Length: 125
Image 1: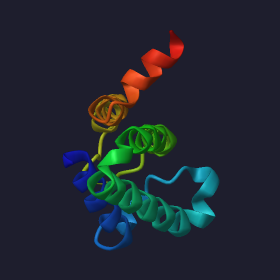
Image 2: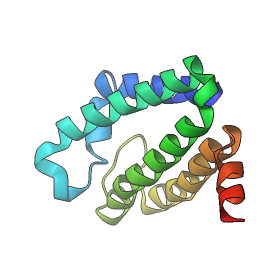
Image 3: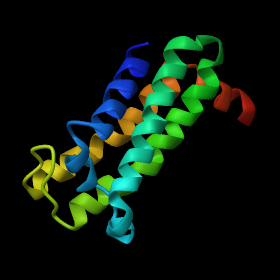
């Protein structure tokens, strides 16, 4: 539930108060479409968050989707680090690098708390 609310909250931030900050994290390849990428990812986050809160029966599926989403947006965090773009108070190489270390934790959070990781382990065996 906490993950669901966190995703929905971040998604609303994409559409409102943090829109420009999130645009700074869009990879340079998509620079011309930064606003569209931010809006689309915000909508996805809201839907993922709402799904985790309201459709708990499908938490495993939403866990997989959230984990994949966190992997997809990792590219933006890497781009922010490589291109030395300041956003969200990350105004040094060290701060941007440390943030990179937290992205795998988000994937683990999504996969672990929803039971998605357990289905992955069972699928492999």
